[in-house]
Image (cartoon, rainbow, N blue to C red; front, side, top):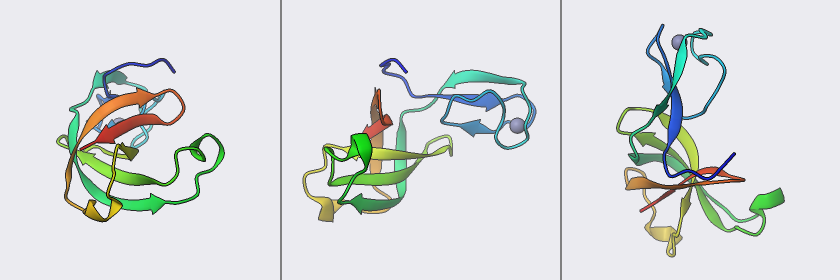
Length: 111
Ligand SMILES: [Zn+2]
């Protein structure tokens, strides 16, 4: 995966499902009539956890916030919220925005 500054996903022409991953087929209906799209880069934290012990390439990053973010387009994705200093300040409903695509982790978000 190369570093890009856009949040990409796929859009299904059959069922209009959008997902923030680049796949060969629609994860909702299985259709291959899909296209790669650029997704909106702002969203809301719907769930999160503080990871104290990361595994593999995530070990050096710990502790970090692993969150499920719902974008403006109602696409949910699992992402790391980068640059959080005070973990107690993180709340469900917080607005976050896409930061960058990390080669190992995938999309990173930030406040
Ligand atoms: Zn579909």
